[in-house]
Image 1: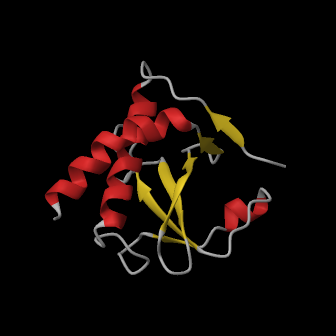
Image 2: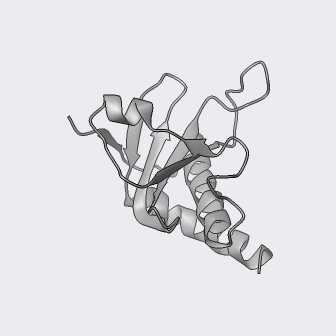
Image 3: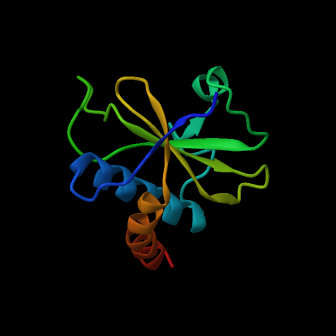
Length: 126
């Protein structure tokens, strides 16, 4: 069964946090600062496989910005992106793994907002 797609709404602070985290991840991946060897970034994909999503490449995850922290100060929401086996970012694909364990595919609106953060992160790491 395919995952539910989350439609971007700029009025939702959580959505802006998802998009900004996605942009940070993309920028860090493109500049080689976020890899499968980065501490806590590698994601094995068990929950995605349980939902019928499969990929022969690599998944990376990052805690989202914003409220909703655990007792250890980590966000309860995460963004997951896919990389090819050569560690090249798969454009236009990302999942929000919410604090309530729902997995949601992010729509194009998240990627449009993420572009600003992505470009900024790339400019800082040149």
